Image 1 (cartoon, rainbow, N blue to C red):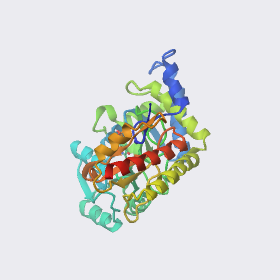
Image 2 (cartoon, protein in one colour):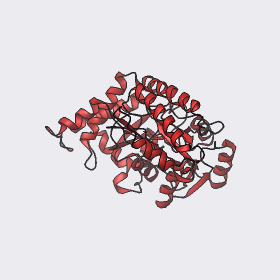
Image 3 (cartoon, rainbow, N blue to C red):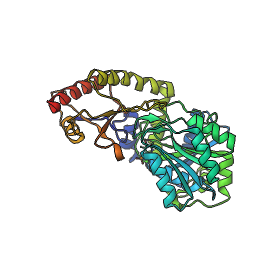
Image 4 (cartoon, rainbow, N blue to C red):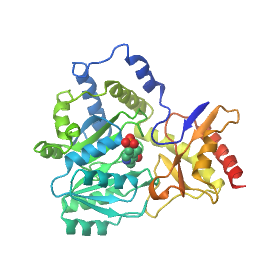
Length: 371
Ligand SMILES: *Cc1c(COP(=O)(O)O)cnc(C)c1O
């Protein structure tokens, strides 16, 4: 039975990526040896070239899942004036929580889940608090919506502020214009839009910011981005880096580029969404939407119909068995939306027919549960 993952964390990957783990053990690569440098150089260059920021920004790679890169970014980038974090989803709150736990002066602009932040309000909060950095999330995975990063970026440019953006759910799947949006630090991971394993994360950081950060120590010793950058410029890493995961990153990146790069990935997701979202509409499901907040490409947040609990819906789909040799894992909502909303993501290596079969399974399951 194939368990189709309709989650954003772990899902089936391409043969190219899976092949790495199958063969790596035959010839492991020593992390401090000469074989590391060409791999790291190539990857760091590919990252900034694909994002079209090779002149202005540098990539720093760490061994962690996405949240480790959030910790590394807030622990390394923010000066003593502190940060204003826009918290309108679970990950904005996570960013603010990480800052506070690190003893960083943290002002939060809290909104209900998915509500569009107001630029004038942000300006007021900045003027009042005198912070020199804004932190926010681009793709808000907990609500399925996109934050207006370009507008916040314009404000940052006007006020001379640094901008840190969690793009874990949007890099490689949404348009991001790092320079036009005045982004100083872009937080990314390899396991979402890139379709690799959750072992590596990276930050794409403006060069003058890295130089500024090199003059002080980061707040988390292991996740000090300036220190890591200095080592990676020479093709090295301060600690043991996961080289098997670097090779998987490379394989996933090559696969991404061969299949049309960002445009190819967006089209692949849009084709899936056309099946899924028209299916939801036919089933009478209501989508979680907020004014001025476009939907993410990676998935959709939907309200649970009256009388249907997330647990029974998820359990029925996980135990789905109608002879197709396929069952489905959906995702609960997080925080205050759990109990009201469920989420379906369209990431990973699956055929369009898989999504057609899922829509049918969802319809039959909902009918059974609400009767
Ligand atoms: C998934 C996600 C994270 C967390 O990444 P992990 O790999 O689970 O640590 C952070 N921010 C956003 C926007 C995400 O979608």
